[in-house]
Amino acid sequence: MFDRLGYTLVRCKDCGLVFVNPQSPSSETERIYDQEYFAKRDIGGASVDMTTIRSFRRLSAAQHLDDIAKSQQPPGRLLDVGCAEGFFLEVAKASGWECWGVEVSEFAAEVANGSNVGCIFEGKLRDAAYPDG
Ligand SMILES: [Zn+2]
Image (tube, rainbow, N blue to C red):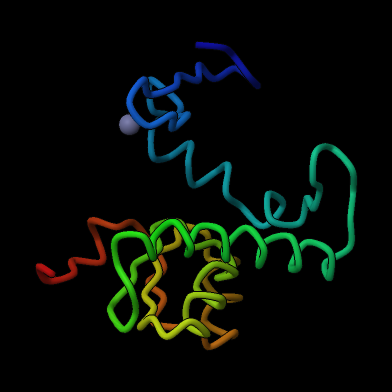
């Protein structure tokens, strides 16, 4: 457990996932993920250009898809909750997945929709009201 930027972060003993606990209220989440959040482009504190960001995100996405491939291979449907500008879905689509995304940021959701990476819902997962499966 450690604190960062006023939030308490904890690590799951089973899988290593680090997450904010307790969760912030949804009103704060929407405030955090405004356009300014996405405009701040840095990796490890160093400002980098958009081409570098995209390369980094694609590499990261490929690694996540490799992990997913251990239990599930395309074709199939893939839902990215908090898809941001759709970098992960862009790589997933190229790998043969039918891509769906949910994003609370209007700015990021519009970028993802404009990238034609899949079906992007702007809002919260519960409001997307996807059918089972
Ligand atoms: Zn876990």
